[in-house]
Image: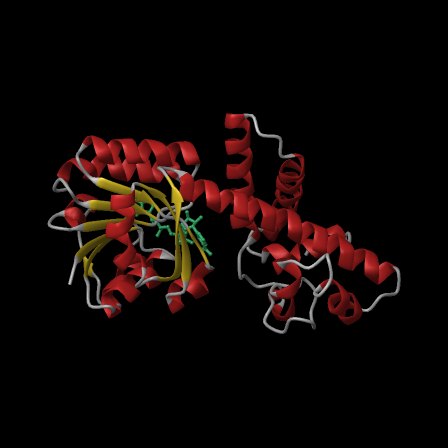
Length: 294
Ligand code: NAD
């Protein structure tokens, strides 16, 4: 049994912490929202009065917070309170530069540190099947693996500090661009008199094949489990897609990488969100592309 501090018990953090409890670990949790702490307590988390209290005697500290500024602020409070050698795992999706800063802060106190953002959403968090993309030293990764395995199905070491975040935003930039491409193709097919099923049958097994078609088809019918069959309820909300596309753009400009389609995808998801679709699944962008708002 390992004593684990879990800071940030929201939509993702709470089910992730619950899986650590189920695996027999002791979890000391903290969040700013009392409702989330109530849920955590119901799952077996020992609720602590502050982030600092949560890290006391913890061998591992997991953070699952909204953005880089929250992670850096929590690290500034708690790193000095943790025993040297404690492993810090940040699973939030944040900008690469804040992630690298967080590593530096942790390492300056003699702590091990890993950025380990996830894909798989709230469903994957509950089922314990998240994919973790990790950045940090071999030693930090080796220490983290047994803990991450209790929350995830696939755990990939992507390289040094910040590379987990880099992999996450590159992957999600592909996803945002491909979903727009697939939405455009289905909207064009409709105008050309092509049925959704016919286009799916061809494209899902031809050179247009991609996850946005085969697993997450943005029209009702061909893939029964896709959000298109459920009124575009998320799934993966458009607000989170926009967040990740903006992080990709920020990273691209910081290193001078040309990402013209990534930039266009960020623009289109920006417009889609601004029309009140923040809580709509990101595949709902097909309705915006057809000229309807959602
Ligand atoms: P959320 O808003 O539900 O949870 C974040 C939690 O952090 C909130 O409960 C908030 O109160 C807490 N928090 C903020 N500042 C804090 C502080 N100083 N101390 C303690 N707690 C604090 O968000 P979420 O959906 O759980 O997402 C968390 C992270 O995971 C984000 O970075 C998000 O981009 C990423 N992510 C989310 C999904 C998803 O489908 N929801 C999927 C992949 C990645």
